[in-house]
Amino acid sequence: PRYVIPNEGLFQYVTCAQYLVELWTFFGFFLLSWGPNGLFIFCISFANLVPRASRATAWYVEKFGDEYPADRRHIFPFIY
Image (cartoon, rainbow, N blue to C red; front, side, top):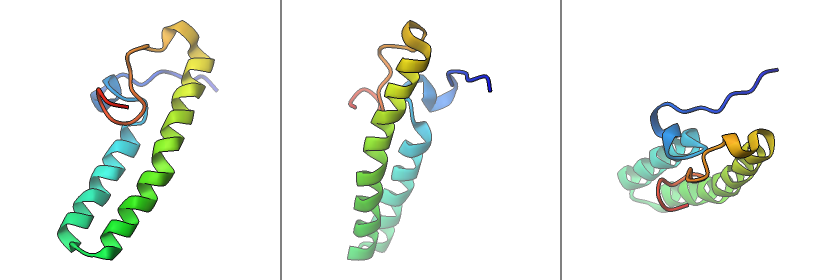
């Protein structure tokens, strides 16, 4: 299959915008539930998605080399 580098929306800033939105959603769930269950779901998702985003960035760099934007972060815009 032919792979492309996504460049629209949040993908301008991060490799895994879908993971960022998922974490944002679970953080909102935690705030609305304001309990240990919501915190647990957010923490497990965070521990799972952050390393996956790092690996996804490494895959894009390996696949596309210099074509991949060097300033694009893994999951959190301007941070990581």
